[in-house]
Image (tube, rainbow, N blue to C red; front, top):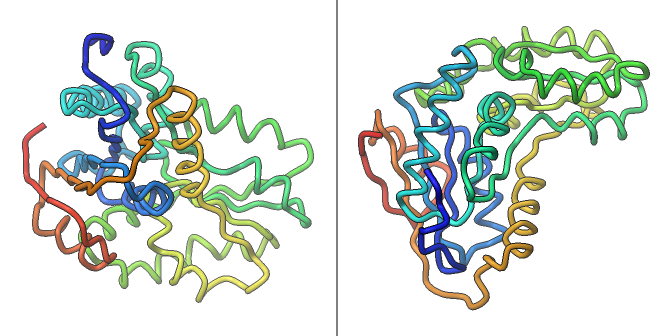
Amino acid sequence: MNTSNLNINSQSPIGLFDSGLGGLSIWKELHALLPNEQTIYLADNKNAPYGEKSKDEIISFSIKNTEYLITKGCKIIVVACNTATTNAIKILRENYDVPFIGIEPAIKPAALQSKTHKIGVLATKGTLSSELFISTSNQFRDSKDFVEVVGTGLVQLIEEGRINETEELLRNYLAPMIKADVDNIVLGCSHYPFLIPIIKKIIPEHINIIDSGIAVAKQTKNILEQNGLLLAQPKITENYFYTNANLLLLTQFLTQNEVKTNKVFFEEF
């Protein structure tokens, strides 16, 4: 699909997609930084979690989500999913004219900040096995040790609204990081920032938790400015949220996270 004939301008919405609810952690940072921009959020709950799918499946889902957001007139697309970014964003950028913003584990800032030279990474299997993650982390492996843990089951519990049931899993996943004396833990999945209050109960106070939400929001703003697409004048905007699986769960999740200005829809895509 070529986007050059679409009527995209500064008034057009920002599109975001994720395998489910996790990308709302990115949406919150984006909305906080750019509150006057209209957004369209796509939750592909039917196919969540992406982290356990094959690369070909992840690419297929990402293409489908991208084309859906393009038909909605989005001027920029935020791939608010680590697994989709690390496996599919290169292909998306090669095939569509709309700008893309990706989210990947914040390995570089963690490496630069680390004093113990040991870094924990909690991520999905799809992210940890991706070429992008491996190439990024390899840049620092001569001087840093990485304790990589797959957060099996965490996304499912978040998607089901059972965040309070993640503590036992988190204790198991974080234990090897604490034992290894990491001083930074990178959250390599957009779902995981919703677990930060529980993670803080488990880890020592000196360990820093790093996620990518603020950096993604700032980069989105930068790219909009560079392309002349940043909304110049404030206006009353509405934010739209779409799911293809569980409308009630998405609505409840938005309410629990104090997202007040929204319209929520169930739609097949």
